[in-house]
Length: 91
Image (cartoon, rainbow, N blue to C red; front, side, top):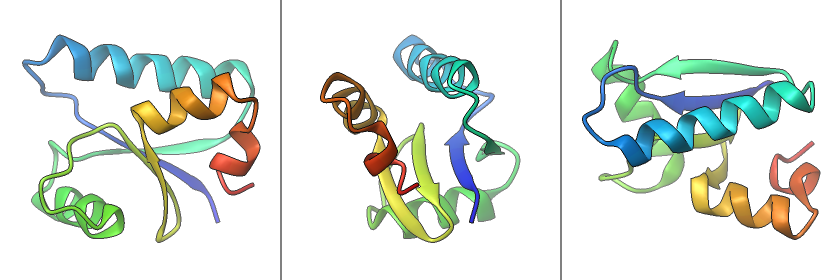
């Protein structure tokens, strides 16, 4: 199963944009393959993201492997700091 990054191409939040960019840059630098799903392109994508997260108000960025939720940006950063990124990404 591939890793999915739920993100938005349309956001007025600088924090969301920075968080998304950091996740993308980190995954690319570590050569970890991932699929990007833009929730701004379809309400179905947003509903899928929120269903997987188990949170009806979840905001991007969110990471999942298939239908298994990995976590949000804060959890991603913690995994990096604790050197457990592979475990976090369910690899």
